[in-house]
Image (cartoon, rainbow, N blue to C red; front, side, top):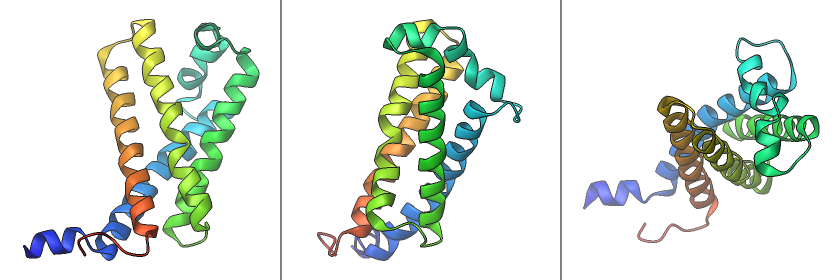
Length: 150
């Protein structure tokens, strides 16, 4: 019973939200930089599906605008999540930064499946999607005024 009470406290939810926001914020900031610049070790790999025309064909969007839209969105969401860890990002913006990555990572996972990519890429994207879903849940519940059962 005591563990259940602790797991439903606002403090616990806030701690988990900050940990996940920091982790996912760092990841998405890096992914955004890798997609919009040539300066990281992952830039070529992160841009390849867009520049080759594979992802634009799958999703029916022009290659470079699609690449930069996704990259800039990832960068902004990542920075917003990192800001929430330090209490800089307002709650509403934090919530948007937590939810927007979900369809992006789901689309990335789908693209890897449709492309027949190795299972490690599919699993990695699936795990990232799951972590963003969990982060969104904990961000939302940590901002709630009262947690049910607490």
